Image 1 (cartoon, rainbow, N blue to C red):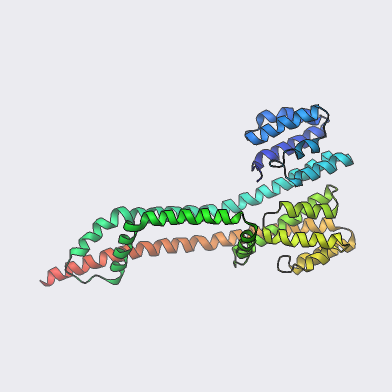
Image 2 (cartoon, rainbow, N blue to C red):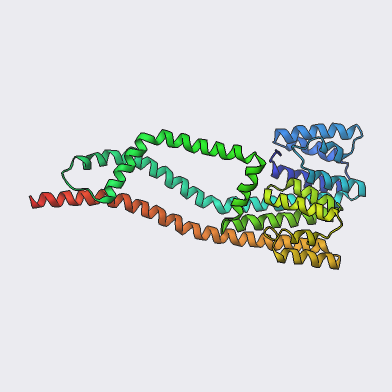
Length: 349
């Protein structure tokens, strides 16, 4: 499990890039930044890295001793940069990759924030009304000598059920969340869970496009940094989180290891990698501009993700408002109708 301190890592890598570009030593750059880091894990790692660098160890060897903080992706780019004498450029590529991942996560969280707030507020208000307010009103209806409407009967039954079983429902929800988290740690269930998520009509396509964009962007960054193709695929397969993509990338690595082209390996995974993706990679391989093709694909699928997120948010907002409105209307109808019937029966008497 990697320590998630993305913003601080962006600052760290950009700081290193600027100072190395300015002629400063890596040790001087780390010394100047380690006190500004808030993450304890990252700060401790930097303190240890600084000691090792001052003792004569290389940067990539020092960070490789902290795999929970710096993934193989970081390690490989920095290693190739040091070995080829292009550490400055590689740090710049790495910073761009981290920034791209961070921006994507932020856009997804931003798109889901409004629907999440509406859902949480709606559920909270619904539970508060159902548990604390409605029972006092509905008790009156139960003693009235009138035939209750079907909606009122449903409301009364639901309130009684929640009053008697709210603790069991809460425990059941907690157990469900814990069970899903535990199953996610098992590779077999994690693979089919990710496959199930990819099968959803809208969110599944967003997840797929997001992984395609990340694969292309990571592949481009690694190749641009000087990492060989085979090693790049291996690194991405170990750092990508979706198990369906991970499995296909392992098969792709085996194909390339046998001497095949990347595009040939992608053709065998058509459900994961669409034909347009494979064709663009093939064009890049034939023209000797694979990096440019990957960069184009990364930007293309990132735009697709952004457009899909806007569409999903635009669709969810009115649906949620309609659902809340229907719930309020149901409660109002269930309460007002029997009151109206009772007042009408009094007038008749």
